Image (cartoon, rainbow, N blue to C red):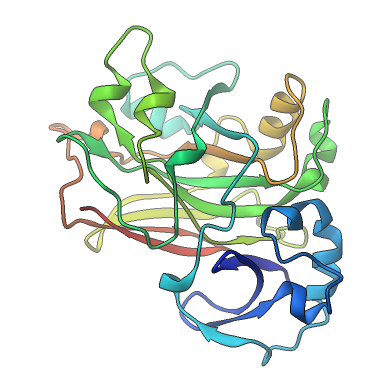
Length: 283
């Protein structure tokens, strides 16, 4: 059974089942103490988690709901993001195709749960559905050929953006505009992709109140997952549990004419093929 890893009440959990009907198995208890209960510590022993997950039965675990899940990457040492990393998104924003990854940092205080409310600020907050890489074995100067061996898995994320703050100066304030409290929901869990043949071409969608706004395959990325990991690790050391937002696709509210921004009461649903769905309400 492929490893899906979540957090409930701050404890590490294996996930069994689908997004619609899933159960959780406590990592520490099921391993009789050989694996940690601390969520972030598990990324350092990902291979051991994978081996233990393979021993679980499809009927193991206790029922759980999306609302009970915490963020599966609650305290990453580093939280990166790539800007303008989908060809169609660059086109809708009127931007040239980048020749190197456009990186910025998001701040840990912005992290939210898979079903947490998003507190809007002002009238120009926007949605951005993203695939998020979670690092397993860290390192420096990782080759593209070896990059997937350093990845624990992937999760779905929303890079909620305060466009007024983001574009308040020259150059733009990407890190601040995308790091307000609660602006970084992730989840519902981290899915191991080591045996997924489609891991470089997954469907990523975002709907607002049931209306699809973003719908793409991740092979539209300008810089793919191995390129991003290799590029970053050539500049700074990557650590277990680091998270990397890989960019959003076309269809963001800011790209519409006129723009369509988030409003209080909106329900944002973000789905990533092979992972699951996160659902966040704007308040």
